[in-house]
Image 1 (tube, helix red, strand yellow):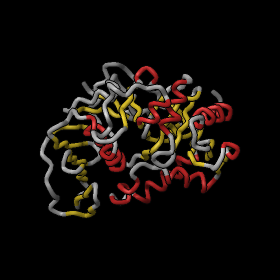
Image 2: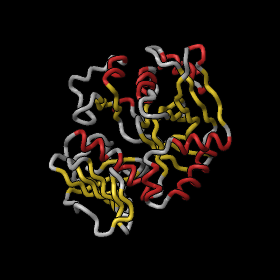
Image 3: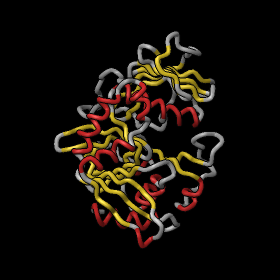
Length: 306
């Protein structure tokens, strides 16, 4: 069964139950357009004959192919933004899928010239709000809080941004959240039967299929999660102009891959255009305690509209 991701048609030899099924591009259920992305199993060379860039996680060949090596457990070859070769003995393991839908997805996007944002994205009315911040900033915890309030999710970790009539759109990813054990406990989510994102860490894959929204939506706001010393200092602070564009740029996913692929300039230009198409850019300062997510959800709903 072909799958859908960011509007692409995915044909994969590896089962990807995380992704929604492909049901056409919107015109009809029988849409027979060829796959945009092909994922297949096969051998990946231990080393490129000619290496242009070499980093701890990935190497790039002279012709722009990217080899991603996850400690020898799973090795991926990403070609031309449309083909992924997976070399692994455990293709169904959750950690293989974590990297396939993480760094490998980032490589695909940057080879294709897409702008991929590291953010959780929730629906507010007829628009979306993206929440970004450093790892551990509380994006998924806030997303879980907003889901419990009835908001639908477009993405937990990454989304692709594209220009559309009237502004910038966020495209749906897949109906899964990734929660650390403490965040899952605060949200009363039982992790005993859930897969770990990576086999040796306390972070779990949480299905959210009924609350997943498959509709690309205009992005009403980009909210950067930051910290403050006390609840009395919590606030939403607006950003404009270059600071707003800088906030978006600083939260791109795997931007180093774009630089390594010599795509830094077009990425910067696209980011500036997309930032201009987002009506509101905000910094959310909040004190980290057990009630932080609920207080911030209250503040966001009041500012954006529930």
